[in-house]
Image 1 (cartoon, rainbow, N blue to C red):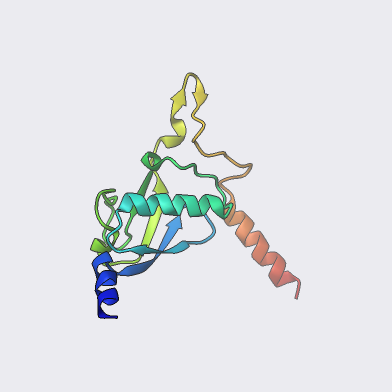
Image 2: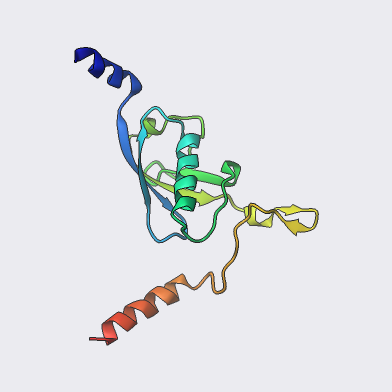
Amino acid sequence: MLLSKQKKNDKGNRLLVSITVMGSAGPIRFVVNEKELVASVMDTALKSYAREGRLPLLGSNLDHFVLYCPIAGTEALSPWETIGSFGVRNFMLCKKPGVDKVIDNGKQAGDATITRKGAGSWKAWFNKSLNLKISSH
């Protein structure tokens, strides 16, 4: 019994991380090992995001995204650092600036996001949905 506990400690502690994706409705939560690299956590977050069918569509190329720790400042986290080295569990995943402008032979790259009609009006939609719920009383 003591040996099994030692093996678990060698792997490191497990953390429940919460990753908020810019433009998405809510955070993605999953359990990771504290010794996992930031790049691995970003990959897991993008796969979970796609599996859940969330919008806006993001793609899966890790080079197009950065992970921030809101408490640590405005610097993006290095993909080669361990996720447990920051001492926090809440992160923000953002698309790198200028990724949507990547052009390949005159066409937009296939991994770029798909724009929706009225993509910039989420605040208007949110306010409208609140007004509908309030006025129905």
